[in-house]
Amino acid sequence: MYINIMKIKLFDPVINEEEISVVKNVLKSHFWASGSGIGKVDKFEKNFLRFVNSKSCIAVNSGTAALDLALRLFNIKNKYVILPSLSFVSTAHAVIYNNAKPIFVDINEETLCIDPAEVEEKITEKTDLVLPVHFGGMTCDLDKLSKQSKKFNFSIIEDAAHAVGSSIKGKMIGSHGNAVCFSFHPVKNLAMPSGGAICLNGHNWQKETPILQSLRWCGISDRKDHTYDVKRLGWNYYMNEISAAIGLVQLKKLKKLNKIRQKIAKRYNDEIKISSKMLFNNECSYHLYWIRVKNRKQFIKDMKKKGIETGIHYKPIHKMTFYKNKINLPITEKIGNEIVTIPIHPNLNESEIDFIIKSINQITTK
Ligand SMILES: Cc1ncc(COP(=O)(O)O)c(C=O)c1O
Image 1: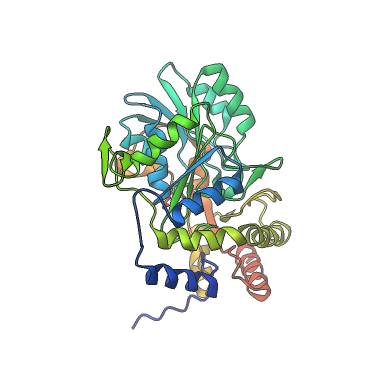
Image 2: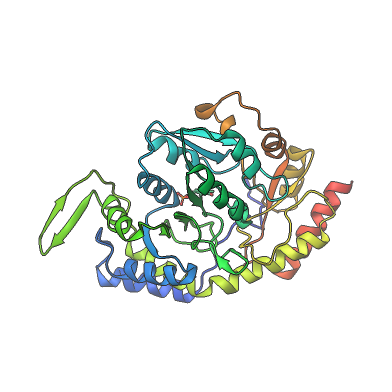
């Protein structure tokens, strides 16, 4: 018989009685969802917009949907989109959904975010968009990317799935790029059963907001009483009331929970005796914490024996069968072979954090 001895989980949403109570209330209300984005979804959008300080916010049912719809604003059919390969596949899928071509570029070895020098090398007249990922919550060099975007005339859509609550010099992620996409998947810092959002900041945000609202609900627009029009194709990507209700509670405690993640990251950075590991930055959301190990398979096995779950984020996208291509991304490939993610969620207690640090140091120095 298989016995699961794993005790310390890699990811674990932080919930208490308040989330349970709001879910019960939504269930009892019999109002569970509406594509028109009224009710708790509307409230969540308003509160999230205030939190990240963006011009507009459109809630959807996943980070993948957020990326897909954000890209649709830019009409990129047959165009090129530059992105990192070290990410969840959704980042690249969104480009394919939009009939454009993903151009993978290498990353910075310290932040694991897209390297602007590599971006510049791959820009051609077909490049319409750059899609950086704030890896683990560590922010990309948006300053440089933004200067490049003006010089080479491309737009920036940020994949901020890991970066809810991250900031750059006090300015929240969500308030920079033309469109910034968040995920509220249960493993994320702001957890829902499923959810996502697009935050807009470009010159056209007032025009783009109703377009995205319509795209997330089957193309429906101009609703009046029982009638509406459909002027474009749309999808069923809207957020439901249960997710929004949980999200409203999670949002209230997000700052506090991210501070706890930062405290753990500081300890990992100071006490784990591996030289190649995630840096400490007091503006990072620390959705995940990564270290690099040479004999990864054995390391993961040894950690499992100690009851500590680990992960691999990620196998590079250009190594997946669907995306397989012969491009050479030396840093991405080296990191793709060595990266291991370790638990950093706020449910960890001090003795578990001590045990994780001690175990990693023991395993990697034996
Ligand atoms: C970097 C990145 N982008 C996009 C996504 C997609 O988000 P979702 O799972 O909510 O569709 C994820 C989620 O895992 C992610 O980590």
